[in-house]
Length: 171
Image 1 (cartoon, rainbow, N blue to C red):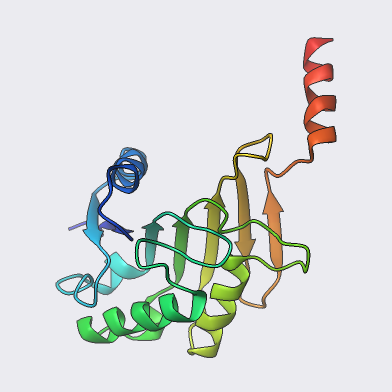
Image 2: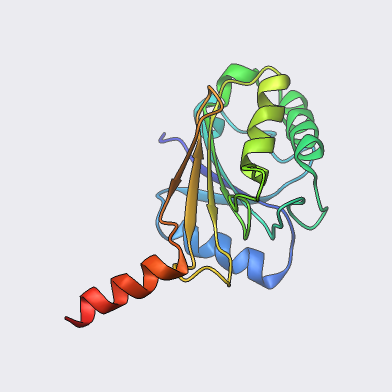
């Protein structure tokens, strides 16, 4: 049997569920689960290797529980141990939420802080943050955080670059 694409939702509001359902249309064999200490029970290692997490997010908190990066990793670790998985079973997380990858003036973002916490807890995983910020012209930014802590930002543009792009399309 093929592995499942697990989508963990960090809230039960209609927007979070609708986002998860939209993502599920793009991935085969999806199963949406509410994030909890028991959310990974009954799954196989192949099911948890690469999971998706969806929730409302700000630069300092994630999901309905307003997890700070350390709190999220601790709760995730509890779910992993409750289900009997090893840290090595988790290869990657795709995290969706506004401002997860928004880089602040100090050069940090929630996704980077969360990756740092995963590393401190003994994980070696790839974390991708798909984010949106209404003030950003592109409306979408993807921040990839490597195991070495390096950050790559894709899809982000400045207002000036967005205007220039619009001018070029009009020509």
